[in-house]
Length: 71
Image 1: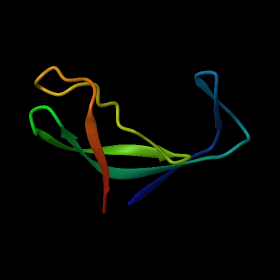
Image 2 (image 1 turned 45 degrees about the vertical axis):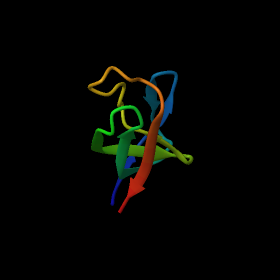
Image 3 (image 1 turned 180 degrees about the vertical axis):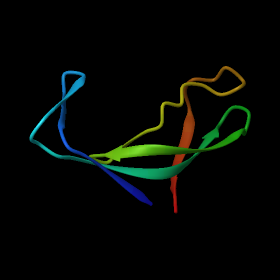
Image 4 (image 1 turned 90 degrees about the horizontal axis):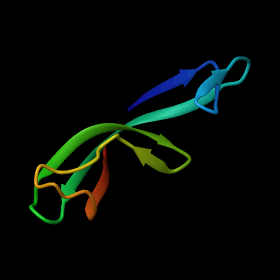
């Protein structure tokens, strides 16, 4: 796993100097429950929430995904 450290605090869409934020880059597996398609992506985990930027599957499904953190 990679750790990214930014010298700044993210507030209102921008970084403020002088503070530090810690984001953890992780690998995630996303499984579409409708068609069974699997995606392996890198995401950022911050305060227990994983963000990958993934929006929808190839089958146009945008809800009902199984997301699992990978090693």
